[in-house]
Image (tube, rainbow, N blue to C red; front, top):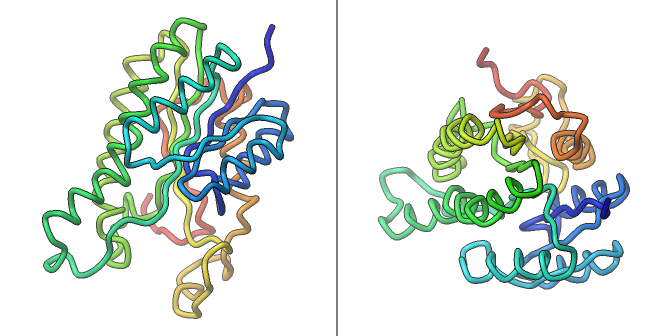
Length: 233
């Protein structure tokens, strides 16, 4: 059997980059995409491949998937990650910025999923892992467009996972709290039960588990990795 292939969208830095390193360490051939060029360099560094493009551009996502298939003929795991979309007071965010937030947090995943689901079906399975946010179930005014559209992503994930579970195509979301790739502030740290930001590697371990066959009976779930930041049951 060919070596398994994982694609990381938005893998130039932070959670995406560390997830790419972890997946490569676990034996995947890894393709990394980012808009900065850092993802392309990282993919090559990890012995895989890279692509420079934007999660907001459907043609770039298509080209990244085509590159993977041309090079390796399979896609076993996809990690969908993105940067931060528009922020601000919910009454002051423009229509254009709400639409941009939808592209950042929801449509980027839907577009990628449309591309890779048929591939995974044909090869007998695969895993899609979306990096979401703790604010899905407890909306936070610091991240308004993220909370709104990633709540929608949770609904899409449930619909997709139920439809394609018989084909062993799984989808799960990882819900990070505050990560040490971001600047720490005392007021945010005080909200976390564990009293500290997460190390990015603590997220990558969960991403890698969900991307692998170790989680073969897990689909349609939202995994909080937030150090006790959220209180919802």
